[in-house]
Picture 1: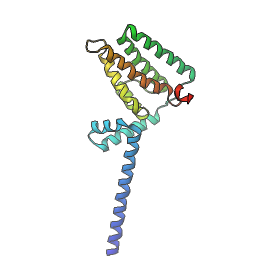
Picture 2: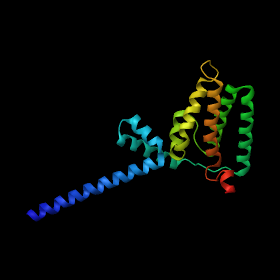
Picture 3: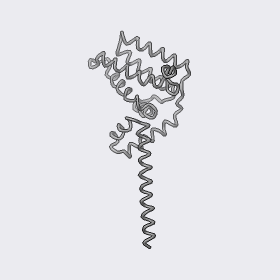
Picture 4: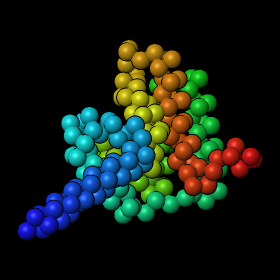
Length: 183
């Protein structure tokens, strides 16, 4: 009988160790894939378990999306559109920031991301673009205040820089940027 108790205890301990290793591997995967968004979600959900469930749901939703690369002609058109938006900044910074927001949203849609709501855009982008997601948050927040007295030209310039970071990543995602191709 004591042999059976020892065997059962060993099996239980091994199962607990396997469960702990599996849980750690899942967290590591999420941390690596979502980067800073992992900690932001843990903080927002007040629990690593709830955050993990949320991030895995984002992955599942993202897998169902039909994200597609852009043909080079379309990428070139978007690059020209971005140059035009930047040129408008000189005469009308707040208008240019609004144009940048619309251009990023249009590009997201062309790539296959749903663009119905800003909150869902952030969730969908977090799966593949977590490293530049903070740029989008900052730019969007400044854009929301644009046109009022509480936005300086420097803040609007900063919004353009932030939008450009996500724009470039979306534009060249999966195809490499022109700088990378030269290396």
